[in-house]
Amino acid sequence: MAGNVPPVADEREGLLAYLEQQRHVLRIAAHGLTEEQARAVPTRSSLSVGGLIKHTALTEDGWIDILLQKPSKPMDEAMKEYEAGYVMADGETLEDVFARYDEVARRTSDVIADIADLGQPVPVPKGVPWYPKDVDAWSVRWVLLHLIEETARHAGHADIIREHIDGATAIPLMAAAEGWPETPWLKPWSPGQSD
Image (cartoon, rainbow, N blue to C red; front, side, top):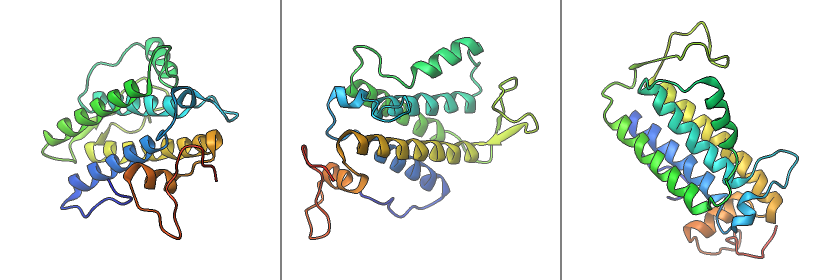
């Protein structure tokens, strides 16, 4: 995928294309990292690039469960899963995290393809402190926009963490990941290079 979303034919295609673009740039933050670097926590936060990708996959999958009105887990179990979702487990690799994210992305696309109306209501789960009490339902469209927002937020977090790891920044990383040619104004990132 190039640096920009290609032209889209309609709203559904646009929403899914922008979500995929944000997934792509989040993954690019891990381009060329070792397993140790993917787990690194180089800032005052407890976030790592690998953990952010894992968390974002878990979050997207959870929103698709909400859209499908799957029963929610008990709050204590959900909170343990949420906290563990930010950390690559012992033995878990970046390849594992990417494979899970790919699986979640396919699920999202399949579910959205089967929905005729993006205005279809998605009931707001009740009894969850961070969901509004005065809203009965979102729409499928709202859920997709929210997933774009969440993914973009974490892609930005991952960019900052990556820059702390080895100085690599988003555009040179994208150029390297996508095989852009070197130009007078842009040199694709390479291992050992720092800004």
